[in-house]
Length: 407
Ligand SMILES: Cc1cc2nc3c(=O)[nH]c(=O)nc-3n(C[C@H](O)[C@H](O)[C@H](O)COP(=O)(O)OP(=O)(O)OC[C@H]3O[C@@H](n4cnc5c(N)ncnc54)[C@H](O)[C@@H]3O)c2cc1C
Image (cartoon, rainbow, N blue to C red; front, top):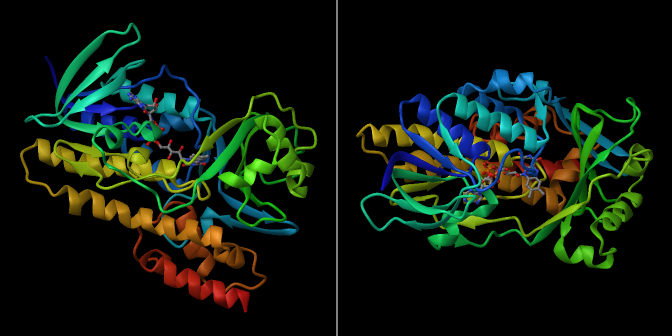
């Protein structure tokens, strides 16, 4: 049977970054990817912190050459209220800009870079069974021609995103505490005048009547935008069934988007994702670890998904390198606990978004001095920087500031 050092399931951002970092450290890595690239994926607005991992993997020049839309912050719109954050004002030192990307192109750049560094990627190869009862984990894969075969590795990294291969096969799933929400989304040729909104920022737009219903507008570099609406699953029941009609009706209820998209060409069929929030009982086990969305996904509102995916890849690669080199490692305290710390920071912000506290702060006429930079650092992805009081105790700080702003 084929033997490898590391088997990675999935060539999304977490799979490409982890496999490249392990290859650079001298390990023999094979990536099994179910689809042919380029392929569509959602998750198009990046945070600045994720470029730290792109850089660590030696892929930053390729990403910079690809011509993606420059992004320097996030803007929030609610009726005639507007507030924005510029990453240059953030509390935590680090990068001040990032990109908004069509993921089909972005994920291909990363995967191609991993291949150039010597990682073997087998496209159109799906993993459909896993056995970790023996000394080494073993996967069964099926290729595009339907040929089934097994590979054994010293370690298995599950980077299968919403495929959630190991959580399903090894019974690791546990429900997310967030309610079931849906996202309906498309790409449009926006036709927007250059001064109609700030194309260097993601626009997060609150529905005028329901503060837990919101839209994203993510400009790309080519005159196109990603547009989506997120709400509780049952909310959509009163809207037209065809997804394109549903999205158009929702947009027509919101004045900012109606104005900005007045000349848009709706040329791409809308899609829907439902109940994407997910969690696991454990992020590692005998011979394996889970990366990115294969472990936990919170919510799209703060664009944290790709950053968490890449951070998990970087942390897992470092621990695994030491394990493969013969050191004894502690996956709980060196990987899962510190990774979950930042995920929990984002979780507090997602909760505060939907219960209204974050919006009370964001749209307040007067905000306490100094807090904007601290919140901005989290919106830039630096959710692990414990010198930031809004990371060290996010719930308490959000509560306190929301009350001050409301007063
Ligand atoms: C509505 C919505 C909006 C979002 N917006 C944002 C955003 O603006 N910014 C952001 O950062 N994040 C966003 N996200 C999150 C983002 O999509 C994910 O966090 C990110 O793609 C996770 O990367 P990953 O590498 O873990 O997995 P993925 O990118 O999902 O990659 C997983 C790969 O594994 C492959 N695979 C799956 N099953 C198998 C199998 N059995 N065998 C072999 N291969 C397999 C898949 O084909 C895929 O290529 C959003 C998510 C949702 C639901």
